[in-house]
Length: 305
Picture: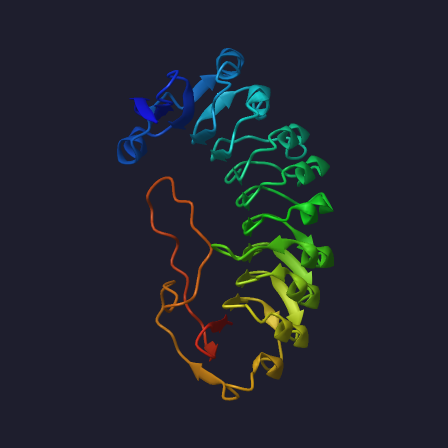
């Protein structure tokens, strides 16, 4: 694969563009070797040009405002060879995530972070059988949307943080697949969920490695079913209204002693634990987040409260 210009990559055989990265901030572009473009792009002319890039496999827009009725240009959904689609901080909006996203059946990565979608996933999300990573973080979602996300058996990372999701956490989320190949993470922090901690989340298979429920309004005890999460490395429930002791089901025959300790006030996890991947197009460090009282069990488990 050859580099045609900054932010554009072509194949070596036919010089067809297969990767396009547009960033709306020149400072970031210089840092990320990306094509410098004006922050606002005319939607109709841009869409027509984009539809000609039939060999495109990777498409990244960061802070690119497209004058296209604020919706994602339809031309993007004609690029059926896309494997990676990242549309971040582009102010896209609409009643829900467009149903046409289901046409991109080769996608392994779908990042729609930092947009303005109030609605959730369409039923067509169930068509993306190869999807590995899904992030709808920092939108305005009041509903997760379709339950057909449970049909995706290659998922490893789901991020719905920083939205306006409210009411009880849907029990059907316990039916999603997280392979644990790299992350095995479900991130629901910074929403407005209420009610109890649903034990059904502990049914996530085959490897739930990280569960983030920080900064919601959950109440009651942590369910005993958490003991079913035998692969769990990190459980984070900072700033909720949970009560009661840590369930003894988190114990094991090999380690019956629970060690309570204070941790440094940073987000650096101990060796052997994983935090949700941070997509930081502007190069900034993730916002600092204090470790609260930490309960450590075995060499591979951490819970934050």
